[in-house]
Each structure stands twice: as C-alpha cells, then as structure tokens.
Amino acid sequence: QVQLVESGGGLVQAGGSLRLSCAASGIIFSLYDMEWYHQVPGKQRELVATITSSGAPIYPDSVKGRFTISRDSAKNTVYLQMNSLKPEDTAVYYCGADGSRRLYRASRYWGQGTQVTVSS
Image 1 (cartoon, rainbow, N blue to C red):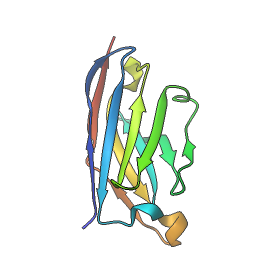
Image 2 (tube, helix red, strand yellow; image 1 turned 90 degrees about the vertical axis):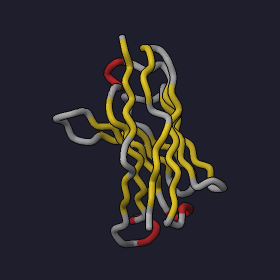
Image 3 (cartoon, helix red, strand yellow; image 1 turned 180 degrees about the vertical axis):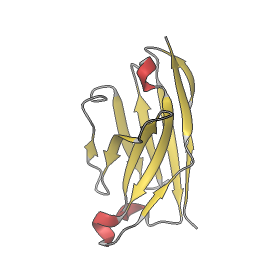
C-alpha cells in the first residue's frame, strides 16, 4: 500500500520559515519524481516544486529563491524548506509522487495534505 505522509505545516508570521516533510512508503522511491503542490479553497492545485528522481530541482518563478526542495533516499523522504513566507503562501500543501517518467506508465500518488498559514 502506497502512503505519502506530510508533516511540518503550521502557523507562521510573514517573513518566517517552515520545513515540510513527506515520508513515502510502498513505492520504489528512486524511480519517482517528487513534487509539492499547494491549493487554496476554490482554486486548482498549483505546483510549487519538483525534484526529479535523479535529484534535479525545478521551481516556478513564484517561489524561486524562497523555497528549496530536497530528497533523502535513505529515508524515502522529500522536504520543502520555505523561507521568506508571504501571506499568499497560505494554502494546503500536498506531496505528490509521479513515476510515469521512469516507469513509462501512469503512476501518481498524493499525500493527505498539511495546512500552512502565514499571518501578516
């Protein structure tokens, strides 16, 4: 059974930092690109950061220089270090695992989400 378990969300003041973690089980971690998305009520889920199976990070312009994604293969865990947080970063953050690139078939899983609230 595949599980992605996020942790590390919470309430922080603007300008502060949080570190999210996502522990994966039930997948061959080294074959999966790992992702962080965020979602606010009424809007679509948006990609925040990707780290490929080989460890290459990819960020949208909105978080470049503020967020850092990393992965620890020994712990099957992906992290999202979020610095200089802004109120507009407030959202539920979801961990995603995408194995389609390495497995040549659809293989995607989601965590349950963790709330991040940034106060002004």
